[in-house]
Length: 219
Ligand code: PRP
Image (cartoon, rainbow, N blue to C red; front, side, top):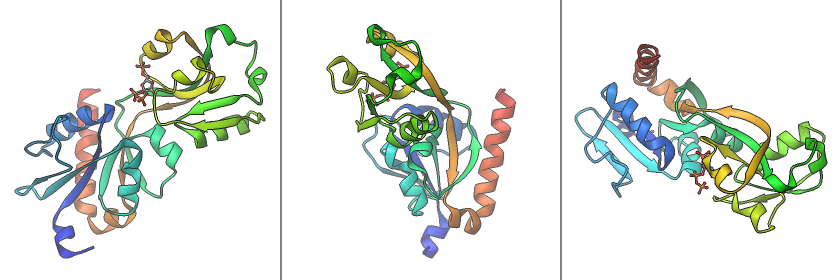
């Protein structure tokens, strides 16, 4: 860590669903910067006065930036953390972006019990989570990793079932899919790089306590 790195607190935020609410929460406790908006194309946004640097990453890549110390802390969904299993500290459950990782199938192919889907193909953005789940159920499956629009896979015969996140349920409904098993509830988490957590303990701890207080005040 260079002395310049030590001066700044670098916060990674993911593009997409978690971004807006993260900016809102951080803004409420005074961590903000000009141009820190969803539409900005800037990937590094600095608040020189407060010595805060925001970096904007792809959702799936955010834990990697934090694990390697390119960011000191970050905000990311528990679903991503469960899939990636990076070596980072999970400091706080921020309670927003509530969703569930679940198993779904086309309504017409719904079976009596989960074991009836054994040996089928599972399309998912979360192959590790899916594999752990089906393994715990004693089921052998074939996993097909996709990067998005998972609901399409069973409709065009790429897979029989999917493992994906559901938030409002409207994507499932719009594509005639039904949930057949719940794997895990997930929310946004504050994470930290292990070295940064020691080297910048006061700043990171202060921010964590401020977020905790904000959550309690809004509960
Ligand atoms: C996620 C997820 C579902 C959808 C669920 O996709 O993969 O498709 O949101 O939300 P809902 O229950 O509120 O409909 P996302 O929008 O992140 O896009 P992606 O499919 O390209 O990953």
